[in-house]
Image (cartoon, rainbow, N blue to C red; front, side, top):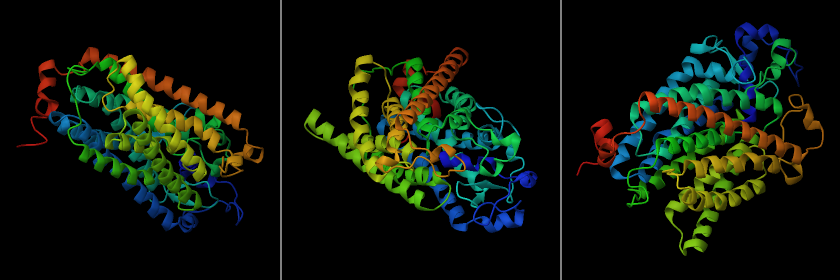
Length: 471
């Protein structure tokens, strides 16, 4: 999503006069609204809207079914309800303040409120891509980014599934979106865009990690590490499920989990390939890399299970697929297909260790392995991006020398990996601290857990008065 931010200086009508000169093969001199309309590619716009729908599908129904199948029958409906309401409230928040805080000038850490309630966004405002003279409607960019803001908090709930009160969870989601998701999205993806390089008040306006040169094509830090660390903090503060390690808690429907995982895989093509913001060769590369890495991770997970347990499992296979999807996310448009395959093959054995050995050793109850898959897979992918982006390995580190003059120089893998490590550290610390404070405050004010009796009865009935299944 390095490319996502190129468009973030979304071109409002009030700023058109500030646009720099562009040659026919470079910039057009002070383009008018009418000229910009001619530069908008309908194919790019169509792809972005399709990608947005694919990412929404990743949350509802894909994530809801994936998580829902992994919990016990008595908690299935509660997971569906949590995902549905999180998507709904985060969509509303995105229009109210989220888009503005993430993608307008402000500070290196957070944007401002200039576009609260989408002020200034219209059918005649545009977002620039990395290609010269290529624009998409700003509304298309708003919609695409909104789907990311909706699914990320929903990922967190798997870590403390089956033991969280509904309304305190929603309070947490609101606070976490404001204090963690929007700031990290701004730090990683915001940059005023190539059209503002000659405008002093915008030329140096960029997010902290963007300014450092951190590479994150589609959300390894913003989405997966961000959510995975929040999930770990949550499961530690909420506590273990009643009966954890004392009674069996098998998934109630691996069939539904398989359906959800399959929909996640399909939707992820919009997640990763859509992050190029246009439909071209890089888009195709990100699409292919997503496919290859996921397939490799699925195979490596079942091979590890075969060696460790003497047989592969469907649960392991779908977990490996998700780990591969997570790992390739930050590298999707930077890696070669070979590099993507290596990332996929490597991530599953490491995540396997965390969801089995590490979790058991430390005794934390990460119900659906949000930390072990999303945080760990995201960290591997984010740091690995610095390696696979090396042109010597078939990767591509940057797309536009005008935007990134350093791209003219020889790629320094060690330096880029160090930048990636720093970006990971900032993300871990930021979301870890924010999440801990929010959970502690909500726990003291509202309480986080239902009573033991309500938890034993199941959240479907005690929280919603309904059942997923009526026999």
